[in-house]
Length: 409
Image (cartoon, rainbow, N blue to C red; front, side, top):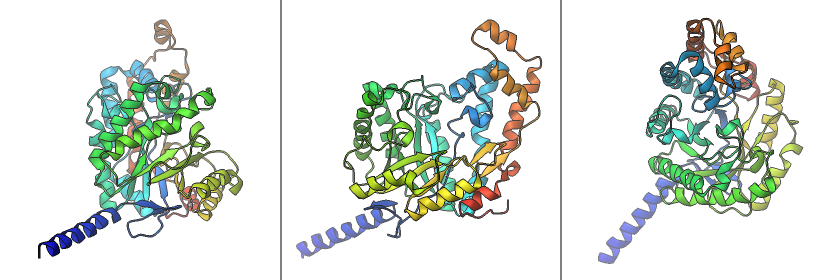
C-alpha cells in the first residue's frame, strides 16, 4: 500500500510538472512552441523609446542617447523639471490603452527594451530607485496578461555597454566584454529579473543583449567574448528560472552568427536584426542555414523603419521561412514607418535647434540658451500630451503590410 501511495504521488507530481511546463512558450527543434503544443510564430512590435529614449525618436541628431538627451534638456528646463518630465514620460508614452490596441491588431507579443539602470541605484530618467524597473514592468505585464499578449524583455543597455554606440546609452565602447565586473553585474541583474518572473507564463522570454559589438571596433578581438558572456548570463538565469526561452543575438548589431557554436541551453532562440537591406530570401539565408545546422529556432527581433511595400515583402519572406518578427517601432514622433505616429508640437523646432548648437563648454551653453525657457518647457510637455494613445494616429498602410488589423480607436 505504501509503495502504491508513493507511486501515485510520483505520477501526480510528474503530471503537475508537465502541466506547469506546458503553459510556457517553449522550443522544439526549429520551432517556437505555444502553450497549446503547436508552433507559435512571433508577431508584434517593439516598445522603443519608452524605457530607452533614443535621440532620433525625438528628431534629434547629435543628441542621440538618453544620457545626452537628458543633458541637453536639463540645460533648457533644469534638473527638477527634467525629473518630473521623465516620470510623466514613463506614465504617458505607453499605457493600458496602447496594449489593448496592440492586441486588437492581431499582434501576439511585444518586445520591451529596457536599460539595466532601472534595476540599480544609478540615476536614470529622473530616479535612482532600484525597484523602478519592476514597478514599470509589473504594470505593463499586468496589462498584457489581461489581453493575453506575450512579453519579451530585452536588455537594450547593459552594464559597461554591449554595443559601443548610442544604442546602449554607454560610453562609446563595448566595455562589457572587457570587464568581469560588468559581466557579473549583467548576470546578477538578469538573475534578479528571472527570479521575479520565473513563474510568469505571459513572459515569452528574455533577450539577453541587444545588438552587441558594433562593427566599428576590433571585432576579431571582441567577438570571441560574446558567446562566453551569454553562457555566463544563462548560467545565472537558470539557477532561478528554467521555464523561459533565452534569445541570443548575433554580433555586429545582431547580424553575425559566426561567433556561435552548438547551442548550450535547451531553450535558445537565435535572433537577428535587419534594416535597409533587400527584402529577399538571400538576406536571411545565412540564418536559415544556421537553424538547419543546429536544429534551433531563429527570429528577427527588429526590422522595419521602411516603406509599406518593403515591410510587406520582408514580412512575407520571414513568414515563408517560419521566422517570427517584432517590427520596430510601435510609436514615433511624426512618422509613417511604424504602427503609430503623433504630431510635432508648436515650438518643438526650437528644442531641436538647441540640440544642434555647440554646447561643448559652459560659455557655449550660455550662448545657446533660449530666450524663452517657458516656451520650450511647454513644447516638451506638449510632446508628452501628443504621444498619449488618444492623440496618436495609426499608420494603416504599415499595419496592413504586416497582415494586421487596424482597429478603431
